[in-house]
Length: 609
Figure 1 (tube, helix red, strand yellow):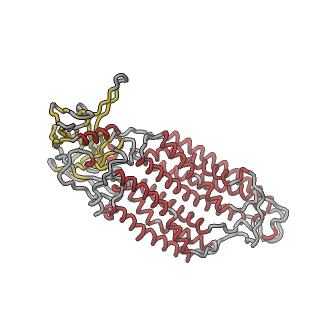
Figure 2 (spheres, rainbow, N blue to C red):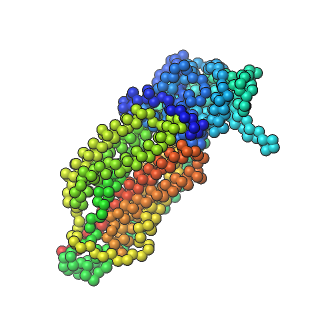
Figure 3 (cartoon, helix red, strand yellow):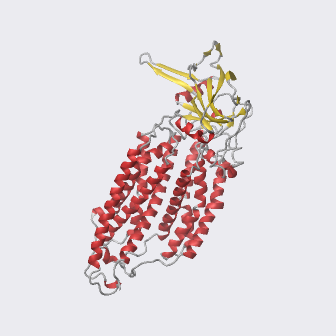
């Protein structure tokens, strides 16, 4: 089943008609009013291995009951990105009308189709239906392993489903499916299978699919029905309230920040007292008989190599900082409903395109300040610094999904829509932001002049090398978010709904604070050794947190999940690399600006005539 179905994902044709309009309505969830006896449409969506959340296939790729002509529901961009391919089903459900063991269809399965179902059940395939934006999950079949000698291996197909639907007034509150007191139909290996005394020759099998519908009244209002879905436990609950871990992280971070700030302020106070005693002469004479960070005042503002790349990193990092902050605050305002499939995905794409002006402005503005001349190339580099790796990674992942027949493979219309958003919105806004930044850029405010001849840098001890600084600067911010990182991974690569956005905001603020403080401390130690190459060092020191996050993703894959197979593994590691790159750019930008502000402060505080 996995990696070898060879079927193209169905349902892409009708998914794009209302995309642009639905993006605007992602954040609301209207109650649909029903009268008794009204038809309530049940959509079939997708199936896939239980342990591989991102490996999904269209429900109708299995030999199941299906209408003669499949009608697909128009989906939002986020739903398509989430692998949804909703299609109308044969289930006929009327509001508040119970149904007992109604026949859905009668199928005659060939031996190949039986083997296909057996393979799906052995891989623990589950299905997902959707009723009034409520996901309904269940397993395709039943598998039992028992005994050692002789060994028993039984595979059964669920041919009867009980739908339990809760309602309040004229709206649907919750729905699930159960197979309690239902006997699975055995799928015997080989020919001669018999079901209910009716056999089919040539290795075939005849099955009759039935269903029941039961309605239950609920006191939960429609506005709070998301709580009912969060409390449901088809998938195992691994996210508990983790206040103790969060408080522990907060205490450690506060102690760390307090230690860094107090020690650094005391050291700087002593430096200022020593350097400013009886100072005479101009800025150019301050290095006579001194050592430490003061002696390199004529080199500390010497512009770095690879200016354009540095400014592109700062620009894209500022863009992701804006993007992450916007999504967290929108989540805190309750704009993402668990019944709106893929709403965060759609929002991230829209905000990424709209915040492109931030990257262009920050990059080109600073590039102009440090005397960059090739501003056109700088804009192009800024716009492609992340989008190019993203497109390359997506191309590989999407190709594998397409080859395996997974619904995670995006339809051509969705690809064109996303590409159009970048070409018509993202790139032009980057250019506009770059032009505005170039025209509004002032001069680089350096407290000291820079000499034409660079000062020779003394040999540095091993603990001041770049690799050591990257290890320290990356590990400390990572340790501050390591607890919350597990829950984020369990949400993105698992089945959980993340709702603790207040805690996420606190952890995000802690991450930025730790990154800035650690960068300032490491920059001070670098300057105290008379090494003025702080520009790229400040970016790499805290930006290396991305490397720790990727290492953690490998650990999570091997020890915290049951994911396997080419399809799931390619998507996991491909997008984990991109996630690490996002953290590197974002934290690298924050640490650079913190270091620049610190350096300007300490050199401006010296008494210079």
